[in-house]
Image (cartoon, rainbow over all chains, first blue to last red; front, top):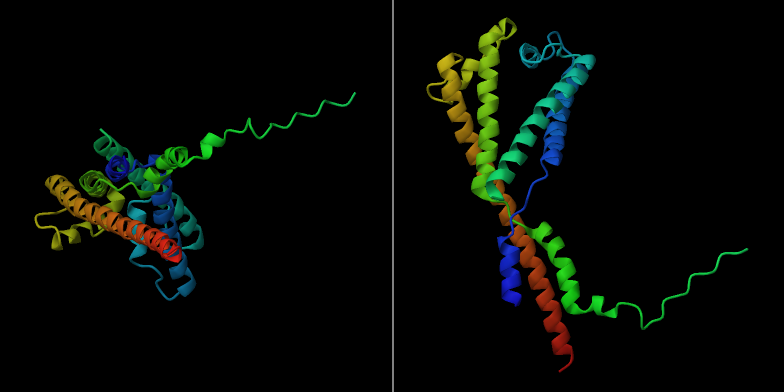
Length: 97
Length: 140
């Protein structure tokens, strides 16, 4: 009896909450871009974030400034949410068939 | 008119059977399954692979179509991903590379997560067995 219960525990696969994964990924990506931008803004210098501002090519409106860090957070959250949601949905479809 | 107080349930009416070891196990099993359930490594790898492929293919398509993105040096990824370039052919190559790299990363993340969970589970079980053994020895 105990063995079958243990087997049951071992063989049960975790199902992912796709929405929670989306929010988690979104917060990580959005928060990461927000902090990276803010760090460069605070650090200052003659050309702050000359490489990071290239992201403006993909994220219209994004720039290395305080306002840009907020815009970057929104873009990062949206992209991260989409990726996390895809991972959660695909995983559940494959693993819990 | 004051409301009638609810009669207290007598001790004999309380469902004492619910606290038996059998029922406790049955109630705890779903929670334990949730807490210690492993990730399916191949499925998680495939899921992250699909996300990686879509991301790299999407970035390449935006780079090709958007005039704003022409200056973005996405082609530098070709240094790591053989055959990749910011062209329509590169979309397919990028998708394959994105899937491969993200699959390996996802598989490894799932492996590490399952390994960590197994170690934690083993330590809990060992600690519980040690506690039981100690009590047994106390009674000798």
